[in-house]
Image 1: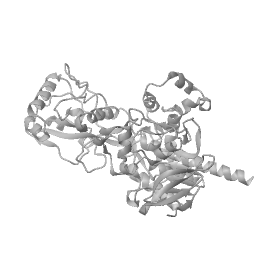
Image 2: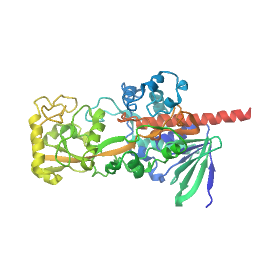
Image 3: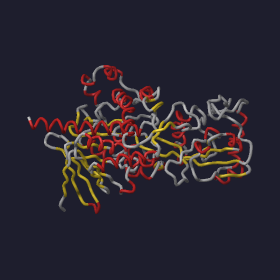
Image 4: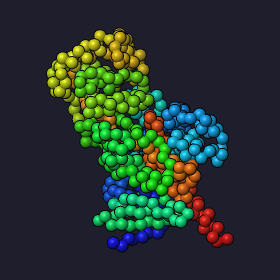
Length: 493
């Protein structure tokens, strides 16, 4: 079978926020750019298409106060101080082992924080409008901004600009491997198009902006484990993220970075047909597993700072599921549409015993669990919008806030599982979004942005994913185009 070839200056893999930001930025730098997109036109955009695209910013011109601190607190486990002490020096003087180390490079995070405001301003130039979210969570420690229209608005604005300026998007085409020259510089991508036909896209640089591997069951099982079976993707867009960008870079010696055994976890109703049917209502009730037992502090802190850790505890339960048990006191909670984002109705019954039967939990066990919890609740002022300190005493696990007895019928329950929004494992990059090899050296011609680059460990720094894709996509595209221009100028001299 013959292989068709296509020649461009820059080849971008992925049509989400990272890929399109790279494509438009490279185009602005004078490059001829092609974007490879696995999906059909109507589904282009991957994860970005379905996300609210929240941004961890306090204003349009500044990230939140805890931005770099949160990344530093989740930088990669127990790191060797003999290596990390070198971080204070210029990266060019780092030893090779540190350059290639799987940890959060503070220079990369500083670049993200510094470039976020100007990247928002850049996106505004394409017609995107940003607004502060007044109530993003039932309780919040840090503010959030978002584009009007969510991630889809970003996709449409960037794709329109790219195509209006002559850019090419090739649909139903999936990258398979990277092409290198005799000096190991990346000069293109081998892909498969409609009808399983091979096709090659050549260029002076390749930008990998094709997400993580949450849409790949084999990679999920290999890295996260067999319990990944219980993870539901946040949206159908996740299924386009099959990990090829990460795999084919690792195949040519790229350094891994990010927590390959973890993911961004979000609590959701497994019955829902909506993308991102988040369930943040659990702080106002109790969570029980299939055995009718509590297993976690339902109110450890502000929802935006703790929902992921609570969701991981849900995932650890039998079959990766739990039920939040609520009573008539739920009517005291404002903005329930923020706390309950499913379109599916609650499971309801006049008594706990009858509710237990509907949940297929032993009635006597659920009644005992709730009775013990109720006895541990202490009087106090309930404040659903703040940490109220209304806690339990003498029970394990404790509940630190919003602990009120579950005593007034009718009683309600919602099932909650962990969705997988994206995976954490990816590629090591520098501040220019250039991919590094396992010696800590730049792989010529290869860039990564968005979830294909790895910077998260253990706990997600919320509302930084879309920001990361836009910032480093733009950096990658601009750098690729500038190097192309420099090479052309050198040839003309």
